[in-house]
Image 1 (cartoon, rainbow, N blue to C red):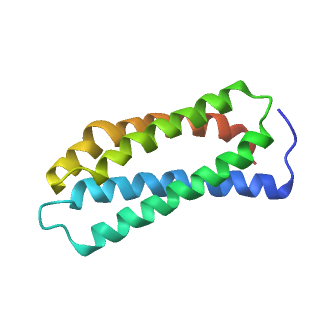
Image 2: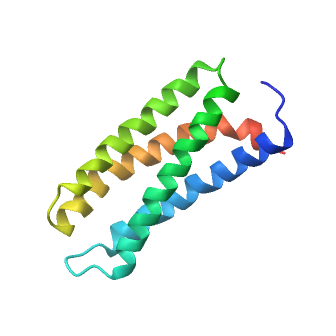
Length: 127
């Protein structure tokens, strides 16, 4: 395990926090997206997309930081699969279909992936 700089440690800690925040956003959407979904649901979805963008930027940094860790490439590929499944959101016509997409596909995939990533990151941020 390589030694991290203060900045790298901080980035991984913030990344870990963002993973949790994304889980909360998904939970909110699953509970609040209905045919007459509140306007907040759209804002939460837009914030979720921004969070995914931030995760992606972090992955670029983590790829360099953990270039010798084969597992990192696998984890990043798993994230790309989640992003691909979330793209279906934009072609679905009803909120019921979107909720089903989240509940049956995106959220279970994300939560399983998040658990793997947190296991990878935990040794580096446990101080």
